[in-house]
Length: 164
Image (cartoon, rainbow, N blue to C red):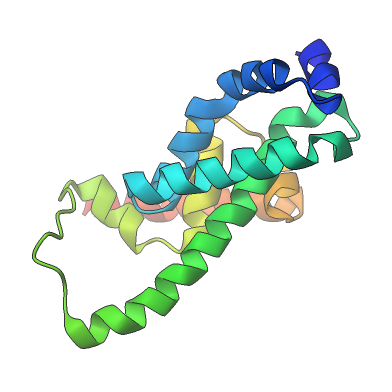
């Protein structure tokens, strides 16, 4: 992987493609769950992340932190997309829900849907991608202790809500 990073930093697109292959599933799954199971928005966010990562891979200082670096970019893209949801929500409230609105009604998805975006992102990075509190802290620009306490609180809330 380190050889591919060095080659990608020199402009080798095939090397960058190989790097992307190592993380694309995790990027997509994280975006998918953080963006309330919206396939199109998740794909858009991942695409934007990859474009930005390709354009700025030369700025990657520590080649051993490629994965956390690209997830930091993803995290910023998710936050930007979530901000747009709030703008769009104002329009929806006046018009009402679309007839095509179809959201799976499983209990877990309903609980996750009510969760704040930042908490959903932290949970996704931990559970789906297996990141540690320190790694999530770097990605989300939080202290590792804050991540661990929020993750503990999130899991406790999930347990309580799913037991009812």
